[in-house]
Length: 147
Image (cartoon, rainbow, N blue to C red):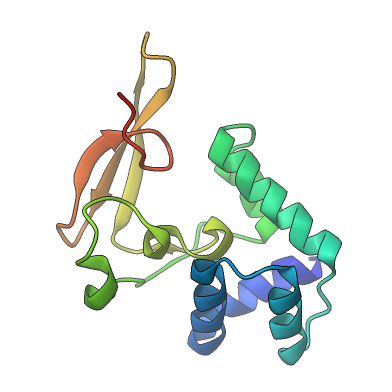
């Protein structure tokens, strides 16, 4: 397991670390802040590790790799956690950062995305559902509705 995988695995079980990663991820913080935070927790993350994880997350977003492949890079095992925060989530009527977390590594227990179809519209559609009732709609894999 590489250091990035180990960091994400620890974050899944450490609410304080996950909150810090979430705050950095939501703010769009660069690699220097992630590397510094990792070091605080005893992990040696390089800029290359960070870049590789970003590229893997972007490849997932563009459909170039599967979520299973991303899990192998990000150290995931399909783990979820209760990421529901009414102060944040009630402001959205579609998927957002809290639904999937840092590097899309820890999805909310209440978020479900299932394959819907692919027809002549030019992209694969997915059914996005919030178990807390915030949304239920069909869109691309990231939750973006295309016309």
